[in-house]
Length: 109
Image 1: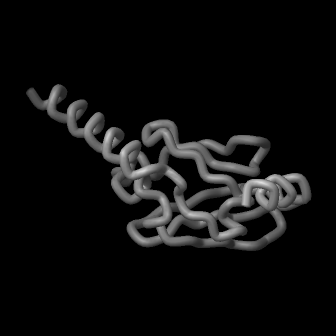
Image 2 (image 1 turned 45 degrees about the horizontal axis):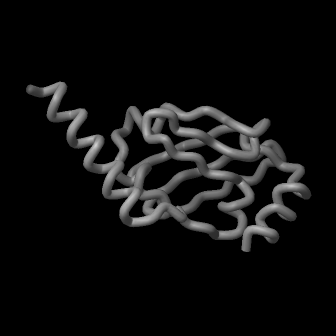
């Protein structure tokens, strides 16, 4: 799958111009007029993010990807077009969730 992803990335001409995230979907608006949506559940970090965290994103790779700095999440246009969901391991995700909880607890206490 990695070689297919690399080949697709090399041949992409459309770029992401805008991003929207709600409780159900992530939507990429592309510079060629297309709108591509996928379930927010494809990214557990986005799924667990707050509205503010989901809305704080930046384009990376010249518009071929999106980064959410507060969630430490990156999603590539090529990966979305191939239908790839998050590849993060369960162990890594659980560690991330625990770090979030620890941060919230330390701010509250």
